[in-house]
Amino acid sequence: MNGNSFLLDTNIILYLLNGEKKIAEVINGRQWHVSFITQLELMSYHSIASSEKVAIKRFLENCLVTDINEEIKEFTIQIRQETKLALPDCIIGATAMYLDIPLFTADKDFKKIKLLPLILFEE
Image (cartoon, rainbow, N blue to C red):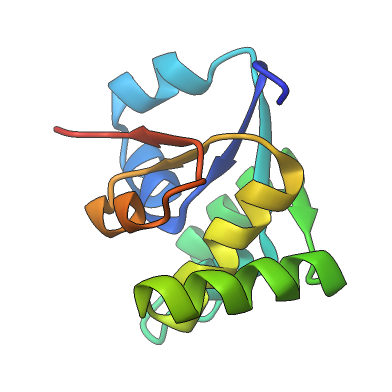
């Protein structure tokens, strides 16, 4: 596990883009990873403004985006069978497991994934 990297969940990025200073302090100076699912969730929101889209694209340019692969698929299947979480969350959790880095999220449902290294943001 790389102690200098995080996989950022969609909610963390949204909080950050809305000015959440506590999150900025936690991720400052670290390597940011995102799942392709997070990229899709951020860019496909139905009422996204042009300025928000630009800000999201700029943010994502500073992240390493991980696409699906066979190992992530296997982790996803395992997680889905064990937890019944929504498929996008299973993929995000599986991506963190594949990369062997903590998932930084505000979603407590991720606690259901036993082997997932997790950093839970609570306001």
